[in-house]
Image (cartoon, rainbow, N blue to C red):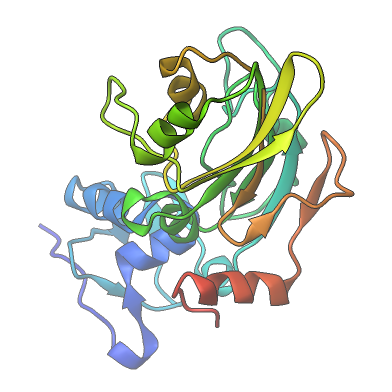
Length: 257
């Protein structure tokens, strides 16, 4: 019976679950679960928690080879202006257009969507090849801000603004806005700029619905330090330059090479 692979010298190695996360396969915690379940092998031997690997090791998840050379590069980050009418899913049972169809192909990794936007929501959507970066942006523990432009029918009253900033009771727990700014409007429609530090499913719509207000348009304009570029039209994408990626990683206390 084969034993767990021996760890190479520390100066030439990295922890296996970290390498897998950097390859865009998921968060470090998810990778640890994969290792525990026996899905990962190193040089043909089932890996264990604590296994370290070097660039010369052959790493497989199932039958898929994970290439170290790709993992050592700076992760790629793409900013996409999602229009309404697209789903943030690779496969849709209703065969609706998917945001993944427009992304460039990557070798030895996969694109991970940072958060989701529902079918009727537009705006900023971030993709990266780093599962670790995606997890840092999305995990509730890090409370990364999301900013939205919200159009509603009618206008918020002072007590409703107070409820949004103080906390609104939802089925899955209370939710609150960090900030709300009145952006004005014409006729029956009124715009607000809303900032939250979490990204639960349809949370903005549900918070306004809890106040009896109908959201007629919703657009994400910022996620953390990344803003939707004003010149990026709907359906277009733009890849961050290496310097911008390094700056993003440093802002999140992640190694930037």
